[in-house]
Length: 165
Image (cartoon, rainbow, N blue to C red; front, side, top):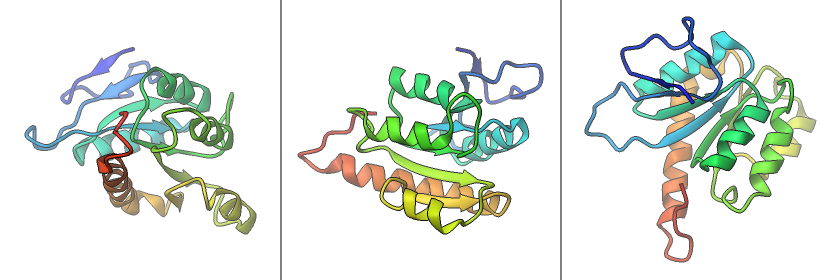
């Protein structure tokens, strides 16, 4: 795993897989870790940069298989994923997360170019926190992840459900 510091340039000659981007926001903030999975390098880099600037510590994955490996190693409170990716698509990633012991509490935000297909939305309705479409997702992405992290914190704060991430 490669660590990318806040002054580094993620994606410029760096291996994307397993990359951690440290938050660039106020160092006194509580930096929640999130996982981002997308096979489009430009989208992945932009998402990582936006989330880092918003104060999140980000782990980047090029596809669902890399994201699943990262999640199994250290579950994340929030996962941001595309649906259409090679190796393992977002549907399978979501299914695996939801069926893992730590995945019940994880808040999943989907951002995909698949659009608002009613069949897709219905299939995801009970398994994801929010569904955003590309490229409209960019301005809404940080707020969606903030809401998802707040939802995770509320769930984790319940006495009968200790936080795992």
